[in-house]
Length: 250
Image 1: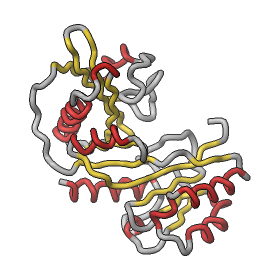
Image 2 (image 1 turned 120 degrees about the horizontal axis):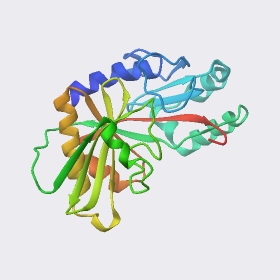
Image 3 (image 1 turned 180 degrees about the horizontal axis):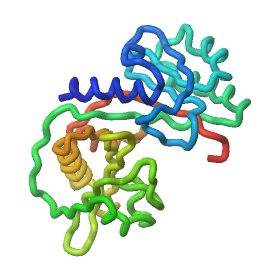
């Protein structure tokens, strides 16, 4: 299963980072020109100033050409994955400050790895498309769906809500970040945590996305161990790490 989605990932990342699939598996680090290609995943408006990605070997950096002179020296002799360590990111941050940008935190991304069977441990209600609108602005769900308002660039497609009577215990949702690429998010209310609700909901949604013929993926922060455990328990495994520069004040 993972191999199938990994090959699809190489094709998607080559669009996102204006490179080739081979570049993503090269021995040396690769620097490309920033270009917002059709079909890319977009998390910031306009042309990206700098984005970088590693699948564990080299790193591909897509950046505005004004950064290329610095980046060639920055990345020349470094092991690709080490460019995501603090010392390197701090140096990159110093250079970006000259242009009014700073680095975002790193995003640790997961793809499906194994089959997970559905069961009926909790009562679940499903919502699609505009049916999700009722939940926007609800502070309980900042991760499962766009918050506080819908995002037209990455529309929410499906939400699954675990309920106990009239009470919501948790919600998972997916946004279509690129054509047929559905990113899953999860929120479990504090009083219902450590009961397996998060993993259960994410597994259900993951299976439904796969059944649609789309690609489910999951992202979290390096130190968010609880979220990473949900990914592992829901049949995901680590696949890539990425980050980007954003304008100061954003």
